[in-house]
Amino acid sequence: MYRFLLTPRWLAGAVVALAAVTVCLWLGTWQLGRFQDRLATHRATDRPAAGAVPLEQLLTRDQPLVTTTTAGRTVLATGGYDSAHQLLVPSRLLGGEQGYFVLTPLRTDGGPAVAVVRGWAPDPPAADRVPAAPTGRVTVTGRLQAPEDSGRRGAIAGGLPAGQLGTISPAALVNLLPYPVYDGWVAADAAPAGLTPVADLRQQDGNGLTLRAFQNLGYTLEWFVFAGFVVFMGFRLALREAEVARDRALGLTESASAI
Image (cartoon, rainbow, N blue to C red; front, side, top):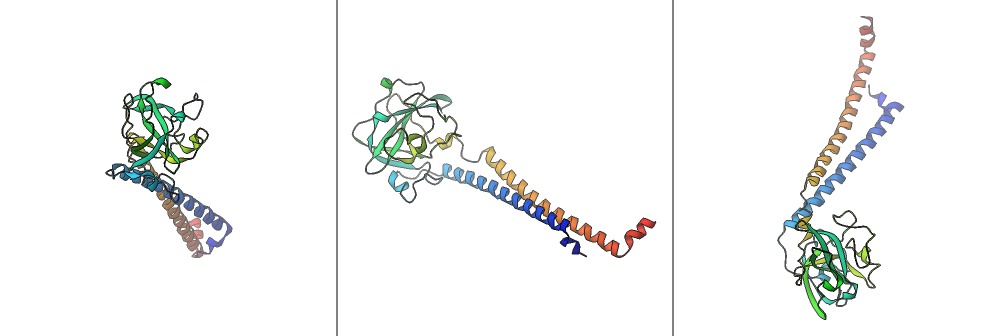
């Protein structure tokens, strides 16, 4: 009764259905992964801040990248500021007001440099009005931030004057600094007079459980439902075809036609 499943038409249909189910499951799994990433960000953001940890203990040779686990951690970085390569980062919001980050590389003791945002200024500060970075050996305490990309709010791809930086990332700094830098950057807890400290930016970007996160969860359900619907319709059509074959074998189809 089910020998029709071995015909070219049904074999081709089975291949198409299998491909559709595979794609739906893959897309559903991908959307679920996106939701889980946002949930992990939410948990990491809401987690009470742990004690300060030396930066070199979080970003090591074995794990040099900032992750959802290390982003937002309070870190200590010791070294000397390189004021000659200080940069301004425009189009940055703080308290709903647009201004500039003041970024100064800190050359750490025996390791790569780290980009430190020493604070925020509401107006484009002239070079002679930017508070000077401390000289000599200093220890900076601040929140570790993940490197930015072009999709981040406020990031600028290019076209900026000399001395300004559109995106805070190792990729953007590699051509501006004559030495290697750590992944990510540090938002200093304390700022000199004339600058405002920059808070943990993950709070400004949301804690992960945004409308977009629940959209990911909704899309997950949709793709899994689509996969189930394809399987259901395949079985339903096969059963219908088997019923027709059975009626034909019993002569019921011809009898119905004669009537």
